[in-house]
Length: 227
Image (cartoon, rainbow, N blue to C red; front, side):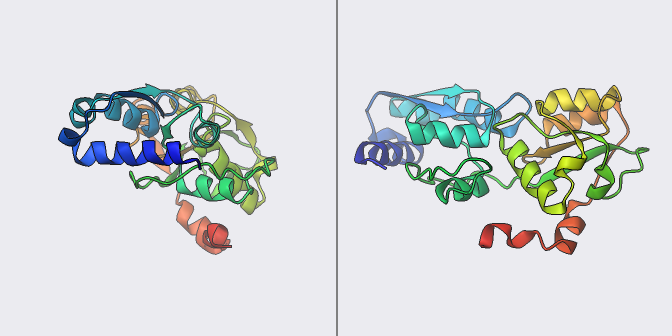
């Protein structure tokens, strides 16, 4: 990472904590995410956060496909800051992203924002109780380039079912509506709780959440990011 980029990140960190000490005026792009996801909510909130505005920084929230796209845009300089899942940062820096061996080293973790558990939403009468019950089913896996999609691919590939489900790459709000219309059997989302998309699904259907922790434990999934 070049010195200018590091300085800009440090300046923003200072602005968030000591807004009255900075008079700099600089426009910075903050990468958010798709509609219905927490990334865009975070980006929009930072854009209008009074201490940031008072510091002289002009933050522009910009929507995106999500985590992986954000990682690439920060690395290339198209965005100054972005919300990115830590697992995607690790895989990107190590050159382990799916079908992408590039090492994204021009990035720096600035702050922890929130925990984002994986959630698998189904209709309560679907009969789907385990992730492996998704075989042959229509599943919303998030938009391509998002952390939701990337982590769905990692998890379902680990379970051996990624190529055995009918994958639908779509925004999470669209997936929630499609579930209610019986166009999907389930949708996967990787975001904070409560999720607007899950609440939207609950407004149109009697939903249930699949216990992914059981599948992860039994398949020894959790060491994935430790190796």
